[in-house]
Image (cartoon, rainbow, N blue to C red):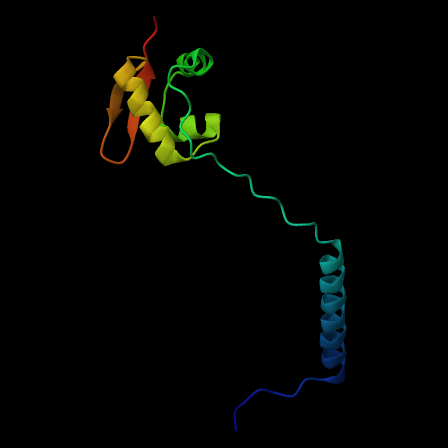
Amino acid sequence: MGGKKKLGLKQMERMQRKRDEESKSKEKKKEKAAPPKQRRTIDVVTPDVKNTKIVAEIRKMNVLTPYAVASKFNIRISTAKDFLEQLEQNGVVEFASGNHNIKIYKPIIA
């Protein structure tokens, strides 16, 4: 009745060659594989709010989001949120916009 038809000799040879080439290419890829990348450790400690260099860097930025600050100072996003709140309390930045998920600040130019 129905079912898959038998392959011809040519078709079987082609499939066998294709499998052989694939297995050879996989072996070559395994040999050429680069060593795994090292993960960068991210600081958990909040930067010093009273450090003049850090405050100067903050004032250069147009918009301050937790992601932007975390990327700039190589800290975690949760730490960056706390850092921005401390800066707001010290009067370095002011709240511009946002909701419960993200807060956007802008620097106060003095």
